[in-house]
Length: 295
Ligand code: UTP
Image (cartoon, rainbow, N blue to C red; front, side, top):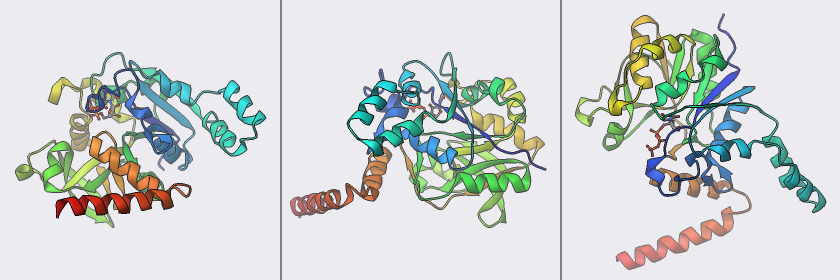
């Protein structure tokens, strides 16, 4: 029987160069989408899957992540005395989870970041969430991936179909459908040209990994960009064990990219009960004025 997935690893030690200068002294993961940092969406997604232990891989200038999930008694006292009970409850909720922080000394790649979690994860399966891939909170992804892991007792990667002109930004898989939206992966290529991509299914930032990935990562040499790539380790794993992909049909925003970040902000603002009416009116008038100028 498959062991239970009760730990999640959040690699957050990247430099976030696409968001400079905003990310010079502040973590990319703390950029807000409406009123919550990107990182919090990912933590809430994992918590909704009954994950109890949260392991964050941090690096330089990432202290704000730790502070965000810490107990903030002064703030809590202030909110209590001013009767702001709703937000007080939300703030309290943040410090309820169990977090462990591991420092990745240098940003040597996603594969290396995951390897840093080995002493905390030990011999259990675990989820990996890249918080800059924002999954719409009303759509299910991680829950379905855990269900698939439980069925096959094997590694599960999240996949999404991406347009041809974006495929070069992703790891892309070849595979055979073995169940509804479930693929047995036969190969994967990191950042292929559109003409040589084996499919239009890209690996996105959610994974259920088994602990055997650690031994492989330990032996994986730096690949593209001089970084220890998770995709390279996965390719080695593929030769030894089955690896599955789950094709996600819901809404995902690439929060590591400026346009993706803006799309996430607009979409989640349109869902926010206290903002949506006013924001929608603004968007209508803005679009109308853009169209008028173009004609
Ligand atoms: P990205 O490729 O998005 O890199 O990393 P980045 O540094 O965050 O951003 P850009 O491209 O420079 O703008 C994907 C994920 O892997 C983590 C990042 O924090 C992000 O969640 N990562 C990457 C690490 O934790 N360590 C690394 O060495 C590299």
